[in-house]
Length: 576
Image 1: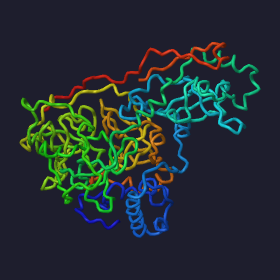
Image 2: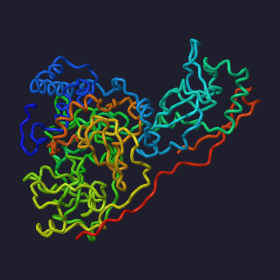
Image 3: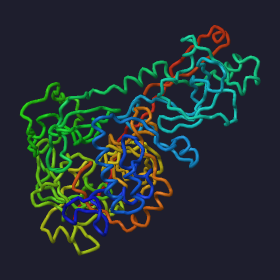
Image 4: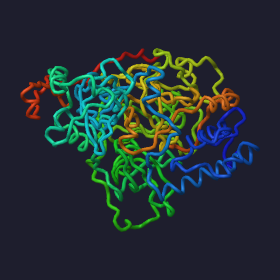
C-alpha cells in the first residue's frame, strides 16, 4: 500500500498489505481525515489536499497518506511537540458522560507529584479564579473538589451547595490554583460568584462556617509542582539507545528535546535530524555512553569520529538503576526457554529462548519461530525485567501464549515442546516475583504511550491486571492494538499529564472511524513489524472569624501520607 519492500511474513493482516501498525491504522481509518491526523500527525496542521484524495482511490490515497506521514516526520525536526486542538476532546466531559474513574496520581511515581501527592481528595478546598464575575480584573473565590481524575479536578464554587450548574474541570497543578489563604497573603480579593451573590449578606461568616476544619493544599504545593517538573536530562546530551531498525544493537543518539521527562532522541548519524526515537528518561532502552561495551552488547559504531560541538556524554548516574544480581550461582544459560513480551508486537506474550547471557544480569532473547538468521531481532531484557516470565506463566494466569510461528502441534503444550526441542525451562526462582502495591484497578483511565509509535500518547484504559502486569487498551481502537505494560512503566501517565506538560494527547478514535475500520480490522491478524517504534501532607484549615476579619489564615499540618508502595509475591507453577 505504501511501497515498502520486505519479507512477506513481516507484514501485517491476512493479505499482508501493511508494513507496520501505523500503516494499517492509517489505511483502516482512511475515510476520516481526522483519524489520519490522530494517528500520524504530531504537528497539528490541517489535512493537505493529498490526504483528501484518499477517500476516492485507496492506492492513491495510501500513497498520499504515506507522503503526509513522511512530511510530518520532517516537520518534527523544525517544531517542538506542543499541545494542539484535539478536535474538541475533553477529559472532563469524557469522564463525566461515561462515569469513568481515572488512575490516581500516586500510581505514577515517575510523573510530576507522583511521590508527594499527599491526601488531595474530594472536599479539599482551594482558591481559583472566579469566572462568574463582571469585574475587569482577575478575582478569586474558594471552590471544593467534587471529583478527582488524575491531575484534573471537578470543582464547585463555595455557596452553590448541590447546584452543579457552574461546576468546571481544571488541572490541580495549574498556575492559577492555590491553597486557601493565598489571596489573603497576596492581597488578592475574594469575590463570590455573581450567580449567588444575593444568597448571603455576610460572606465572611459563611466562609468561617464552611471552611472550619476543611482541608486545603499545602502552602508549598506550587513549589513542589515546579520542582517535580525539573528534569536532569538536557538537550545535546549523548546516550546509547536501542537501534529501532535492529533491536539487537544500540546506537549513539543525542537529546533533541525534553518534554515532561520524555526525550526526543535523534540518532547521531541523522543528517536531517529526522531519524528519531521517543522514550522517557527512565526507560530501560537508554544507557550511558560505554554501556554496550561494558556488558558485551552489540553496538553500531558511528561514522562520526568526534563529538559535534556542544554535544556531551550524559552522566551515568542519571539513568535508571537496575537491581544487582548474583550470576555466580545458578543462573540463566543460553538455550533456556521462557515466556516474553514481544517488543515488536506488545499485545502478545510469546515462547522465547535465551540466546546470549551478558554481564550485569542482562540477557539477549529471541522469539521462537521468527528469529532472523543473524540474530538481528534479538532483544535485551534484564534478568529482573517484568517483561519476561517463567514457563507456565501464561497458562496459570489464563493468558493466551503465542506459540512459535509454524508450530503445528496445537494446542501448544510446554512439556511436549521442551521434549521435542531438547530444551530446559529457565528456573522459576530466577525471575522477578516482586509485586508492588501499585493501586491500579481494571477500568481506570490514563494516558499511555503507544509503544509501537512512541511519539504518540493516547487516551487509554486498564482492561486487565495480572500481578504487576497491566493490559492497556487504546480507547476507540481494536483490541489487537492493546499492549502489555508493567505497572511501573514510565510510559504510563495520569489523566491531565499532557495538558500539564504541553504534550499532544491523541483522543479516542471516533465512532465513525471505528465503523469504517471494522470491515478490515476484523480480518487483521497481527504480525511483526521490523521496526521498534518502538507526599506532601494535606493541610487542615482552622478558621476563626477574628482571623478572617484580619484577612489571615492559620494552617495545621495533617497527619497522614498516602502510601502506595508495597510488596507481594505471586506463585508460578513449576516448569515441567
